[in-house]
Length: 155
Image 1 (cartoon, rainbow, N blue to C red):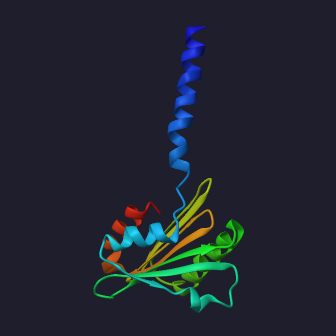
Image 2: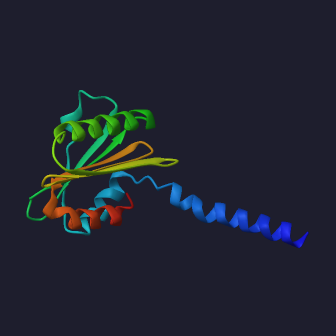
Image 3: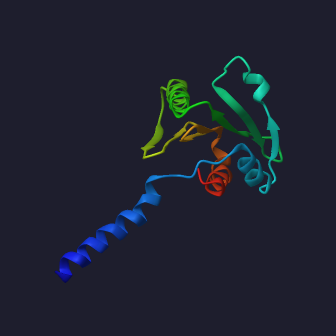
């Protein structure tokens, strides 16, 4: 009886602890702005550029202090629209780098998907969490800097 109880508690605890590995917390545009501005990025609202796409509710760009690259953050109308935008951009990355050596990693979990590609001199990263999307396409030399930002915002 004690073994069954201990096994049950262990399983329950494992599920509880591992659930955090299978989900990410969706952030708002304001949270994105706060987190990236603390890393000294300049923030720009680019929602007006996407007026014709009614499924894009908010669009924000964060540029590094030297303006060598930018990070894009989108809030979409639904999770389905975010998944579609994720897949579209993933395919564009693949088509853009259809020749040469590349490294690709795709992750699909409960409420998020990520895609990372390193090809030629480029580093590309997509992360969809529920109805938000983080889009990154930078030169490989900025990979570590960008990965710091990704970690900071939890995407």
